Length: 408
Image 1 (cartoon, rainbow, N blue to C red):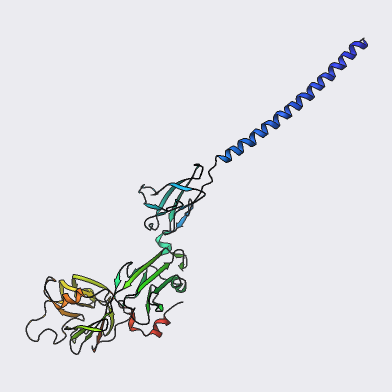
Image 2 (image 1 turned 120 degrees about the horizontal axis):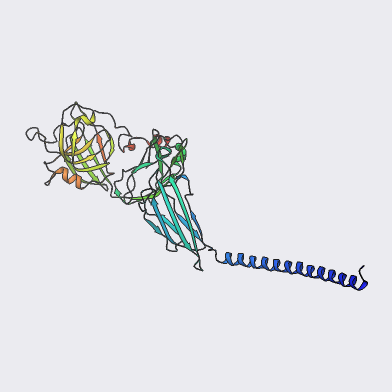
């Protein structure tokens, strides 16, 4: 039997144990709370060590169909410190340029279509903390994109008859969308309108020849523009060219002469040899589209037989796609009748010249004094007027017919 004293001592011991347990639980709770506070402090410290620089690569990682024009790297809240771009697989480096403020990096050259690239970029914020980003992507492929080859080139000086001419490598079904994303303006203030020749060629010109000395600006904003079902443009650039002095030369097939007029004044009238009665020369306004000091001319390339194959035609300037040139002629019969008394060519306009494109000849003088874009008008030939799309010869359409071919 337990005595009352012993029972009392046991009860006190039990109470003490309960009290210790309670204190232990309280202490554990206090420790948990302290650890939680330490954890929050660690998170805040980690956040303080995270860079505020945010890098954006325009071509998303794993994407296909990336732009060949606008792909690049941007950063906010910091400056780019290193950007490397390579052709995936080969490791070939792609050169780029960094903006003065370090916020934008762009490739120096237009990217290739249907090509896989890799970009890695790093940046630092104002505290020197680093951020990084990477992307592996593929540019739009040629099957799903279109591109326009255009003339004239940027920075060139051309004659007053030079149109802006686009030839697209795909059939364009949404002509309005494409044309509305190409604008051509002139410092002269002349209205410029586009005209479609079929589904792949778009030319621009004013109502009358360009004003001498004016500057023409062409803005191409076709990147991402759907020209046909599932086929998108890839070009985005601005092109400017200068119109030189005004030179228009008129060939009279009746008199076998050409009168060269520059800025309203006659420079010279020279003898020519136009097409023979069997191979007449087109009438109409024709624009010089190419110049060659010497070139080969073979009759079979223009749908004729084996009538001629001349490897060194001097001072040749193209007037039509189909093969009409104004060029030097050194093989003309130097007996009677004299040069310029009758038409003997296969449709070209010949000028007196010597073999080798040397010497002080009529052909050399005209070649040296001509620009791509100068106008050569042929009149009084028994042939028809040249088709406006045979070369850069849209001037043979009236202004009403020209504007009727616009999709805008």
